[in-house]
Image 1 (cartoon, rainbow, N blue to C red):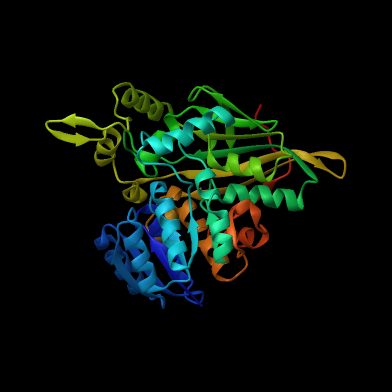
Image 2 (image 1 turned 180 degrees about the vertical axis):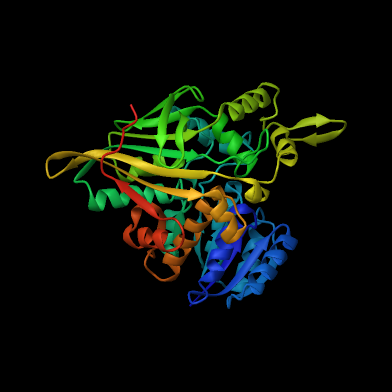
Length: 420
């Protein structure tokens, strides 16, 4: 029986929280903490009305404040903290978990809110020069906590969303059950959903738009290859979705898989985008609306991308109007028993089915369910060892079993079409 604190109450968090509350035989107690406590209170009422036996309390917290976080964690005394706030806050929450002596789980790796901070910039510029990729997000800041978590006897599970998260578990599962050696991994993220808006993002706009507008990169023979944003384009016919345009992006699981599976010769990540989305994004970028640089407007300092976020639909509100399906998975090539082999492990998720179950669209669902699964495996001791780990560093079998059980069933295609 475990006691969990969940930090955050956005679209992904609301899925994870509801799924946790359905596992009241594992999670007897839960605190929902957020800057906007009214959202936590509303969700608590909804869950209690549905009959969950998990005892739920709510709290207001500033996840940027280590002292405030530490005090709240110590006062509530959970066994673990699930961070489904913003990637900007990963390090402050990890610090607070160490201070309070509790385990840590998140869904996305750290990136700074202020990319002009001189101390961060110094480390970033050195990394760009040495490694060759310029994405603002990377695992090095959290991997640096490894020894601290080991000495404290605590577990930190990083990136247990879908991608990263499930995709990395797919890689570990393929390595364990299908290959003696893996040569290539292509991660394909297809959202075939339609929300009816001219333009909206399916998760936090600030994070989403920054990620998509950045240069793409992939690993080949142990080295990073960086390309201009959206410059590598392919078409792919996705099961239950159809043919879609997809573009190569930089993504965090490439970095982790490259470190933990150095024998893989090439790792790439592709995501689908419609032409309307790309046209809107390019226009917004051209006029400076994706900038993180503060500007002065009528005597008030604003950050353009944060102002844009306030104008766009809240991703948590897209559920009732989004139709269609997602298809996310990994294509592997390699060898088994001396013979060439290729497989494709993927999940198809229906936006409206997600909404019927939890009031969410599939993007939040496919991230929130794995967040619950990673937290559950830590709570039950199946994924528990001192240190800082990504999801490909544990036994994949219980995670894969849980995906089938809790709403994200997967398929193995043993003769897939490859991405050229």
